[in-house]
Image (cartoon, rainbow, N blue to C red; front, top):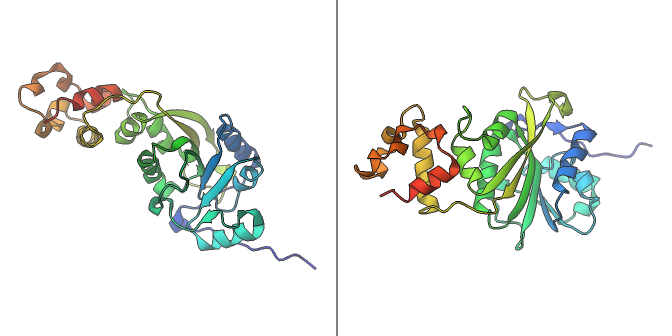
Amino acid sequence: MGIFAPMYTLKKSLGQHFLNDEGISKKIVAAVREQPFHNLLEVGPGGGALTKYLLQIPDINFKAVELDEEKVIFLKATYPQLHNKIIHQSILDIEPPFSEPFTVIGNFPYNISTEIVFKMLDWKAQVQRMVGMFQKEVAQRLAAKEGSKVYGVTSVLTQAYFEVDYLFEVAETAFTPPPKVQSAVIRLTPQRIVPQMKSEAKFRMLVKAAFNQRRKTLRNAVKPYFEHEVLKKSVFDKRAEQLSVADFAALSFDMQ
């Protein structure tokens, strides 16, 4: 007699593409283990491609957050040690799952991956590190430096608080079903020194306004936020993508 194995279906609405390449799964887990940690949160474990290796790490406090009920049932049945360790909600709706610092890992749902990064920015006081799979274009944007065509709001806001390392790319064939986009794995590590800024709110406001009209000079893009005299400075002759994270932070002090 065969043993009953719970099955699951893939849900396009949740951006689900499951990793089926064991080598890639091991590589992602190896990347997160390069630095020690005690508390680990996996985002979107899905069919358990990473989970099965994460559960083998000794002496850690592990939790996973999964929105899809079918996957929660599958994971609990397949890995009994996950009992009481799965948070059945969207990552975007939860509070920090640990009271102490924690590390984050995931093959992130591509349709909300940028929002997940912004969630990490909300949790930056506690997040020790984040390693995860993103759509290649999103990963490139997060890691981009000034002067790059893909350098933008997410690059600046993320890099103000986290160092972004572009680790490796992953072929479409590593997934079931193969996505129509390429993928890449990146690592976020807290910046040792966060640039001084007038306030986080002013900094965000400035960065968003600057890139909202990225083809214009900074002077025209951010005019409402500065006194007329300040706008005469030469830095305002530049376009948004020419300014570094530190440049934006420094400029925030001149805002009204």
